[in-house]
Image 1 (cartoon, helix red, strand yellow):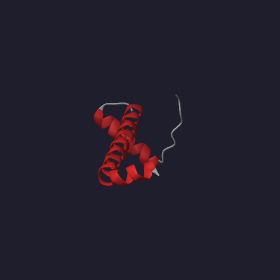
Image 2 (cartoon, one colour):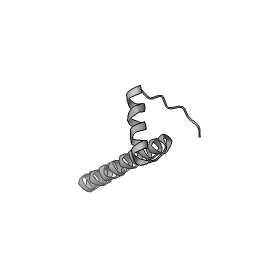
Image 3 (cartoon, helix red, strand yellow):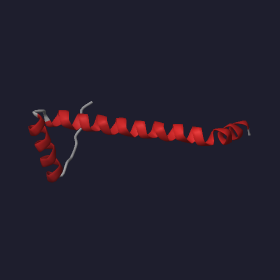
Image 4 (cartoon, helix red, strand yellow):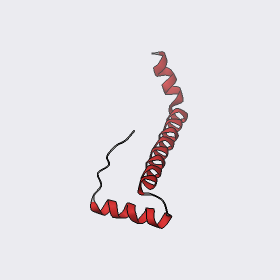
Length: 66
């Protein structure tokens, strides 16, 4: 899917600098950053859910039977 991403001049320059330093396109750097962000959020969500189930499992069971 094509999309337009509007960046501030500072964000554009930071993206350009990373792309040049890593010898990659700005698009590739942006796509990698998005993928890493989404993955981190998914991992954090999954960890939080595991913690909730571990700590509150009995309560969740009782609520599920109510």
